[in-house]
Image (cartoon, rainbow over all chains, first blue to last red; front, side):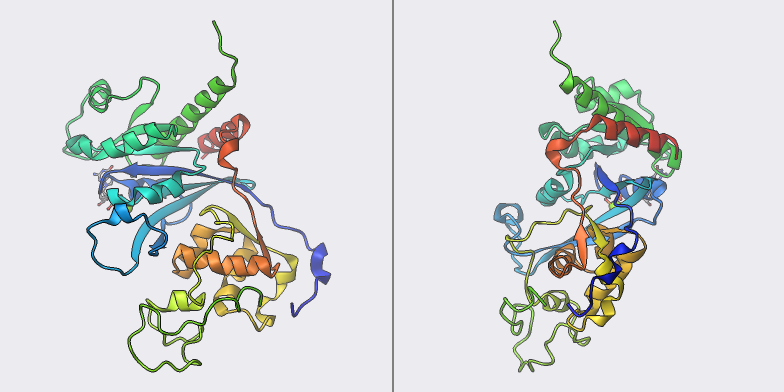
Length: 202
Length: 148
Ligand SMILES: Nc1nc2c(ncn2[C@@H]2O[C@H](COP(=O)(O)OP(=O)(O)OP(=O)(O)O)[C@@H](O)[C@H]2O)c(=O)[nH]1
Ligand SMILES: [Mg+2]
């Protein structure tokens, strides 16, 4: 190295604990909008370039081109405390990029599944995904103007949600509304964690 | 610098057309290289190798005191220097660096790996999946969110 280590005494920056929550859901359901509503930075885009080696062949069967595939993910940041930073990741929508979700989901605290009642089936895949991997999640029904307001119980039944999974109505454009959804995710994760710690009663 | 010499030089990769390649002109700092070739040329064709720890998107890059003046190290690419500089105010995640530098995540992982080897930065480990969920951390997150 060209330079020495004489400046060791300089105060070290705080090294925060970083956590992440995923925001999933169908195409155009408001994922980026929700991330932007609570993020302290404008939602950023990052690209994961998938090389031949990195991608499971099955997932891209039928794609004839050998060029690398680029998948965009957007994310935001909430500094909760100087030493605690939460990142939100909007998941890429296309089904064939499930394997990227695995990387995102790895170590995540929980997930939000955004749903639009006009096309509820768009979020089935995301609900399945988090259920199967036992990642705590909440469903948030994003209310677009002109969409019919169904009672949450109807939506819950249509999604065949486990009773413990919180279901909320939200406005993805509204900061406090999205914040409440995030609180619900983390509370749900906390309940689960606390239950896992308790010795089995009865 | 460590890590830069092991791999085969980048020349006629899949992305480069059939033309005579001047070895000087194909160096990673060549500003004329096309946008497709360039990020991987920058890492000399290396992708995040299996031997390296795969850096999480939310792993934070923290400069070491030795990185006070990264511009003085002539072996660093401008992108290496840019990473160190971006992290000097506050540690930045791999995802943020990729977005700020407009580079694919895989390229940023390689570049940060170089800086780690040179002990110019270190990288924080996010809470390992096995330790999640920690009840105390979850409570702190809830309190933090409520206070927003
Ligand atoms: N009326 C209304 N419009 C919304 C709401 N949320 C999002 N939108 C609009 O819906 C459109 C899509 O929102 P995005 O946030 O880009 O959706 P997305 O899920 O990120 O979309 P993709 O990444 O393309 O899948 C945008 O034009 C938003 O402005 C909402 O709650 N109400
Ligand atoms: Mg989006």
